[in-house]
Amino acid sequence: MKTKLFSMAVVMSCFLGAQTKKVLFIGIDGCRADVMMSSGTPNIHALADQSVYSLDGLCAAITLSGNGWSTMLTGVWHTKHNVQDNNFTSPNYANYPDFLTRAEAYNPNLRTISLAHWAPVNNTIIQNADVKTNFTTDLAVKNAAVNALQNDNPDILFIDFDDVDHAGHSYGFSSSVPQYVSAIQTIDTYIGEIINAMKNRPTYSNEDWLVVLTTDHGAVDNGHGGGNLSERNIFTIYSNPNFTPQQISRTISESSKTINQLNLPAGAYAKPANQTPFNFGATQDFTIEFWVKPNVAYTSDPVMISNKNWANGKNKGFVISGYSGQTFKMNIGDGTNRIDLVGGKMELNTWKHIAVSFDRDGLVTMYEDGVPVTFAKMNTIGNIDSGLPFTINQDGTNTYSPTLAASYRDIRVWKSALPNEVIVNWANQDITASHPYYSQLVANWKCDEVSGNTLADSGPNANTVTITGSPARNLNTVTNFKIYNYLSTTRETDHLPTVLNWLCIPVQPSWGIDGINRIPLCVNGSLSAEEKEITTNDFMIYPNPSNQEVNIKFKSKEKEMKIEIIDAKGSLILSKKVNSSDDVYHEKLNVGHFPAGIYFIKITGKGKSLTKTLIKQ
Figure: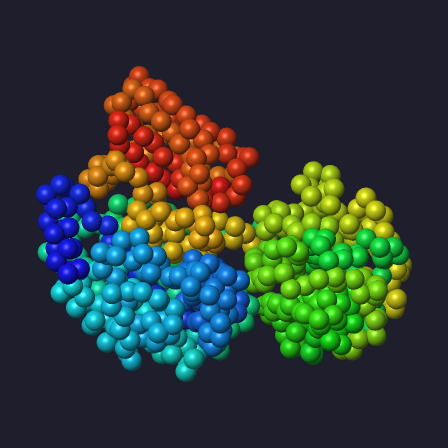
């Protein structure tokens, strides 16, 4: 019955001159963006050339497929869908279903097909689709996808390829591994065949396809699952012939400074004189951030900052420490429950910025060099006051072993959960009264003294730290500090709202979706594909990305037009009527006060509109 209904829909759409919106979603398990783009992949590059895309997207640790595919399909993080590994112990798909299930619920007449190599995608994650078929090879998946496009009529065709991940686990996830590169090139060939089958459909001229290409996680050379940035880095391509190509990229804030470097040898530690400000109890939000550089290779889990007895993670208090002799972690406990988050690799003699924000009725979030690593719900953690001192380079007992030899700089404590944007913008700056959270500053130790066993607190509390042990200092050292800004790049949660927006299916606030739509909003009365192709060239937004003033320039024979700015959730931020006597419109708008993120600038005439994406930094 569905096939007949959709045949009728196609006939009607042809008669009315409308195009039927459809989605082809292709996921490549374990495909590194950097290797993919450097490996001779012409079909993937062709999609990117007509897309809104990012090679700097992010997923969250733990970087395993169960977490990745669940997040990709449901539009929410593991803190909601409740899957972090491949065991699927107690998933919450009933409250956070996948986008195929959402589409079916909105319109049961939609034809939804899922073709998967990794069986849990169909067996566990996707709850409702007209066709769910598992295969044992990517070749079989490709053949089934081509057949579906030639002989069926999907509105959503979801494809899961897995051989690239298999090659990575067998040989290595690197551009220097021929087997891994070859697996990616094979998938590129399959994608070309699938795209050709889509374009050769007899009804293609009456269809408007969004092609999505992405992966569930990245990898380090020998695997994935951890919190390294290359494991969390994903690519996202949203492709359509009528899109204005736009790459959404990270930016890097690099600062070369001449500093007095504080070095604490293994066994040395430091404590502030007044410990009261660090008693955060059961409800107080707080943030700890600092620069650290390991100077000697370490083993196990030596402490960087703590106020607890680190002999047991359930003990009251918090700790930021090394982990497994190569990475770092955060632990917080209340005597009964504990939360543990693991970050990326700590490079010897390399500065790393670590920040952890504790939103006591929300999430604890860990950041590495400005980039979110992972997060967890804090609802299980109560009073964390340990009765032990806040200590730098030791736990609260001041006796924990192993110990760390490290350099520290700009240790800051706040009685608020700082957002990512603030951490990124200020990690490489001295704190001044213009900091948006200055009134919440508990302590700020620059660690830039030239000698002695004390560290001055340059914050409003002037809480001096005393060092136990023999610190060393390297004076007037030229040092490079690097912070990565991923604030505007895509997230794995963005697929559900983007796909549903393309199909003009409204995303309800009650769904609690964590992602945002990344493409122009579905609007009734929008320009036809032909009109868009002509008009888009005359519709310019610059600079883009922008952090202050943005220019909006376009041509129209209409004497009055409306400019609207809409945020990623669909809320109207600004609406302005503009006039022109010479068919050329040029407006300057100040967006400096807008929060960083994705916005849509929409120009509307007599029943027609055109939308472009603006990135606010």
